[in-house]
Image (tube, rainbow, N blue to C red; front, top):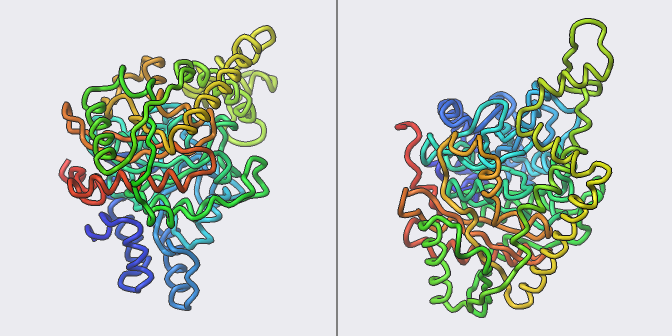
Length: 500
């Protein structure tokens, strides 16, 4: 069973299709492990053994009948708890939605079911995906399997800790400013944010609608490519869904070749402000690519200096609008004050009790930025900066095929270290935010362990919009550069959770 839970999804899919191991056996192995070890990592908020095994039995029966429906047929998966599911609660990490079971599946969840992939459970996150450490979950922080005293990243720290802790072979995350890629860097896993609109957002509880994107969290680049091929594609229920196919991500991984590759190093995201060990890992990757035949080019993106400031005006503004629906009337928590309260009193009491401190902070900031007399000065100006960032990236991609940066400024920090310093927490996303502002794809792949603490570092690869296949191709190249050092996956070196 240990061999099963430490295998890649691609390997497990092969074992299932060849009937060497059943989906039930694999799903049982992961359920046994997460039931035993989830109390240590708090990766999952909800799981139901009976439900998951019923899905696995169905997948095995389909295979027996000769009707396998996808390359990942029978491989179990974890889903971030801000995606609606009809057979499990969807809380978005908030008390205001505690116990709420939606009446419809998100499109991504529906596609997983259609691909006969049993859902293991719903993973932890910062409340409404607002955070970089999972410390703002109303149900307690998730923990990093590399060191249980440290954060696994956020907002999708539950998905990343489930992957790194071998509590799932695959997971789904959502990325608004780095919430897939940053946790991947913290846990030595692979996390991909597809091009905006490449994966349907229907059924995702929105944080910032112009920034949110759903994507894979996995052990390997091939696993991520296989999962994006399953969940991607046009959806008429999402008005921002791209109508054109982006091609096969799996095929691009198979064709990985460094020859003739132009690699752009962003001047503003390659020097100051990065932990020395993280910078050393980044420099090592650049040297390896150059030695393998890639052309290294420095590119200038001057507007990146204002990316964090612009993002933290646009996101709160959109969040304050999106969260207005949680009003105590339609669904979710309802708190009724004593006496003869008005609807306004009930709404205020519910939101006071149901929302956590970070959600309240961002709602206040966003409402202020959108208010009369401040809209042009704040939200309007931030959107202008967004356009400048898009122009900087467009210019950079005329010089380079892909852009590389460290995914995060540091390795995983201690739980509690930054929770009372919002500005320090926000700066974790300095390298990942531009991709969301521009709508381009980005992926984080592990590229070593920092010398100071022995914790994983991540490399971010950015590609032009709709060129996700190019991003996966380069990610596979980078992964292969390190296979001699740690095999196909850095996660194989995670300490045994059972011994911690």
